[in-house]
Length: 47
Figure 1: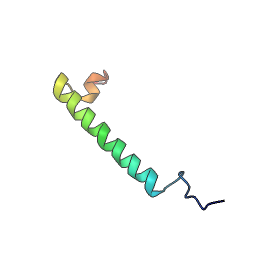
Figure 2: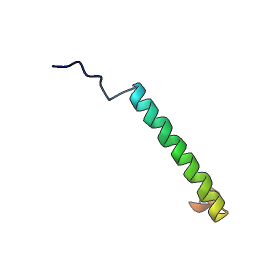
Figure 3: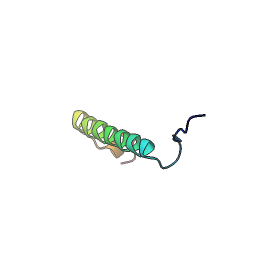
Figure 4: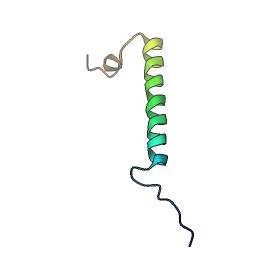
């Protein structure tokens, strides 16, 4: 059997995807705020 690196836990693969998805979420949040004129908390009805 070939020696394969695990894809679970704190691996470089997981951390790269975590960072990419966090950046994507941040950009989507900023664009949504710009388009609606409301903050995220206002959109959720918390303020």
